Length: 454
Image (cartoon, rainbow, N blue to C red; front, top):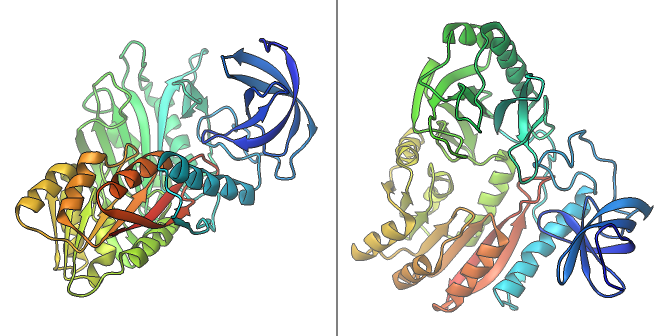
């Protein structure tokens, strides 16, 4: 039987993709991807699109639900592009994430001697985020909407209170909408590039309680900024900072390059692993602080530093990972391409009385190459790259420096697997990997890997 659009087929879901679709196979062996399904579901599925060796479908009827299936706790689930796993138990979500990491490393990396430790699960699976970026737009009736983009689109799904965010963020949105109505603030239109207010960007210090509200505008500022500050201050006693960020570019990048503080401080502070850190709008700061402490604890365990050793922290951001390990080594050197982050890292070291650390501004590959030319021989290298990973050239540069241990913190199993393969080709052996669930409900999974020189 040739599968075609609008056919109804019976499927049993046997696996799941990284993006959250369940996968079942027809009697002819064709894989069908079904969004919103769960492993173990027995379904009637309507075929939406047919490719040569696979197809996409949607659930017409759940014949026998998976034992892992639960009722979603968010009305916007399957509408907004944030969460993937609100329809299955947390235990099942962790199993899927564990399997995703193991499959990537064994299939893409071709590695079969790595020890996989159980995933580090989260104590909090709601209200764990300390940062949110809300796009602002208008619906068809001209009403202001704020929320999150629909999956693979720039259509804003209106969301007044996301259950991944602190409740105070919803109050900031309400106050801002009141301000927009009172002042007739123009809303930015992505299509035309006209209008003023683009995004509302909020950060909070979980330990300090300090709140930062940043408005991204297609201009130098907002009209009646004094009124905005007054409205925020009157209802938010923990407000520490209000910032205007100017972004006039026609781009998907949220933040522009220029900040102007209209109330309070240029930054907020928070605590991680017993250290205090300054967080500016541009600072990289782990979104789930409690899980970050667990992740960094595992990274420190893998680093296994001694008091006479040198630690090199590449992609160091504001210095968080390296600084939490500085008390265990002789010297910490961090490298980061974002200039403001390097400034924050040096200030964070000073604020915490850490005198054996220095941070340099530069691309990780360039910085590693420069330190290699200086004759630096680190005993351990920490890597925490963006989603694209490190790449072969950086791996080669690190290998020439001959650290005995490399600790790789990854936010993408596929690029981790690729880079681990590069390490094996350059005299290193991946020994152990621990997945970590930093972003419960979503498709994302972090990992930390221990790599040792042969």
